[in-house]
Length: 254
Image (cartoon, rainbow, N blue to C red; front, side, top):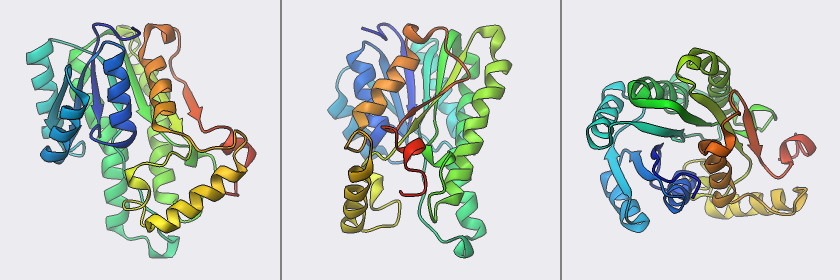
């Protein structure tokens, strides 16, 4: 078990990549806390995950609520070994239609939420802890109508370099996983496409992928688990792209 005895926090853990990673962490022996804004969704997730899973209702965009998360984990566990800053949102929108609210909404969760999460749990992070950020392949390609999300994720990516230096005294490792195209619950509703439109787009993307398929939640969870484990003890300040080769080979065709 790669994470036996470790205590982990996953933001945005009730569905998609967050839920899949929580499941993998539990299989690897960790105690896992997931956060989200909807208590009923979190309760359903914890019921499915089983023993070792806990939830705390919190919005990553609120520093007060993330402080509460840290307080609960400190009281119940005394420390934190792994943080996966996974919570994120995005939607397709034409550049000329972008509003101030669109920018604030995406940056509030993706960037500010990542900073608040790390700030609030920093006092309880154990020496040698692992922080993993969820970035995106969209940082490196010109995906149409997706510039706000790409910019927010680029900002998140920049944190791995700064924080690697900032946290050197406690030997805290900071890395990122950049998922490629991974169908999740957010793919149709949150992104602004109908289920039929997104299914057609995913079929097209799979047809041009070097590995002949799209990514899965399990693919991303495996990468996050590796970075969280002692197997990656000499890796910090790095971004691991998990996209089946799509970023480098097919930029501009997605």
